[in-house]
Length: 264
Length: 254
Image 1: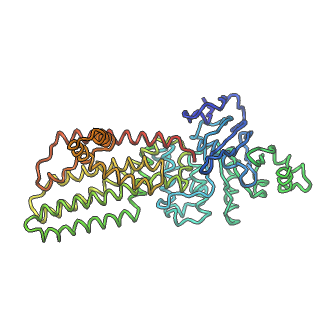
Image 2 (image 1 turned 90 degrees about the horizontal axis):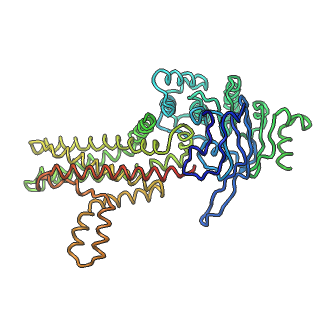
Image 3 (image 1 turned 30 degrees about the horizontal axis):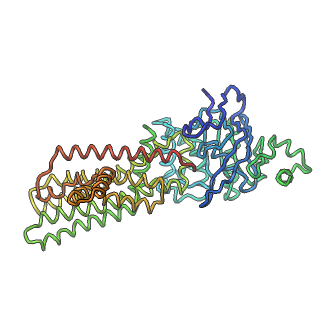
C-alpha cells in the first residue's frame, strides 16, 4: 500500500482520522483535511487549539511554500505530518511510502556536536538501513551537493550556522526522498547561505522532488515556489499557484498579497 | 535491529567522547590508588583493603556515570531537539530507547572493565597471587549498574534529568538495603511494617543479592548458583523496566 496515513503509525491514538488510499490521492503528495490539534498548557492544563481545521494539498513536483505569521501553526502542521505530534482530529495522507521516502529539516537545527559531518550522515543513513558502498556513495554525493566535502571530517560544533543548515539539508536528503519538508530553511543565513540553500531547493525541483517549506522571506518564496498556502490562527486562509497570487495584486508583489490575505 | 545498533553506536560515541566521563574515570583511578595508602596503615590487611576500597570506588564512580549520564541521555535529545531528526526517519520509539540503553551499556562496560582491570593489576602487584574473583565482582557491579541505568532512563521519561538522577541513586541505595529491610522487619511485631517491607523487597531490585565484595576480601565464598539465579532475575527486571520506559516514551509528543 503506497499510502501512509500518519495515524496508522500511532496505534495508541484514538482513531480520529479517516484512512484514504494512495489511489484516491492521484497526483498529490500530501493531503491534509480538517486537521485540528489541541494542546493543554500551563499548570491548569488550559486547552489551546493550535490547528483549527487545516486543509492542504501538495501536488507531486510542487515547491510548496507554507506562509504565515509567527504562531500561525506552520511548524505544528509539519510536526503532525511527520508524526512528531498526533492530530486531535482530521486526516493526513501522504502519497509516499512513509518516512522512508520523506526528508525533514527542523527549524534552527541542532545536531550532535561531537560527530564529524561524515559520521553524522553515516548515522542518519544507518537509520534508513543503508549499508556499505551504497551508504558511502550517497554520503559522498550529498556532501558534494551541499558543498561540504572539505568540512566532512570536521566536528559539527565547529560548523557555522550556514554549514549546519547545509548539513541539515544533507541529512534530509540522504535517503533520496520523494518528498522533502524544510522548516524555515533560510532563517538566520547570510545572503551567500541563502543563495546556496535556494540553489539546493531549485535542483530538487528540477529532479522532480516535491518540496514543502516554511518561510518568512517572501522574495525567496516568490522565486522558488510553484504553489503556496497562507496560514493564520491555525487555519489556511488561501492556497493556490504563486502566479495566481501575483496576478491578483498590482506590481505582482507577494508581500502585498500576503498582507491582504492575512489582514482579511 | 540495524536502527537499534545505529542509535547504540551513536550513543556510545557520544558518551565515550564526553570529557566529564574522562574526569570521573581519573577520579576513580586516583581513589583506587589511594587505597594503597590505606593498605599501608592497615597492619597486615593490605590485600583486603585494596580490594575492598577499590571495589567501593568502582561502584561509587560507576553509579555516578550510570545515574547522571543515563538521566540526561534521552532528555538531552528532547531538549536539544535531535529527536526531530531521528523520529522523522523510520525509527520507532522502542528502537530509540533500546539503542540508547545499549550504547550507554557499552560505554559503562568499557569504563567498569578499565577500572576493574586496573584494580586487579594493582592488587596483583601488592598482594600476589591475583584474585580472579575481583573480575567477577567487577562484572556483577556492572550488572547492578545496568539496572540502575534502566531505572534512571525510565524516570527520565517522566521527570527532569536531575530528579531522575536522584531517583536512580535512591534505587541503588534501596537495592543494596532491600534484603536487610525484610530481615529487620521480621524481628519486629508489626504486621504492617512487615507487609510494607515485603512490598519494598519485591518492587525494588535486589542488588545486594549479587554483591560479592565480602567473598572477594575473604569473608565466605561466592555462591555461584545463587549469583546466577539473581543475575537472571536482575536481567529480567531491567528488560521489564525498559519496556515500561518505551511504553511511556511512545506516548510523548515533541
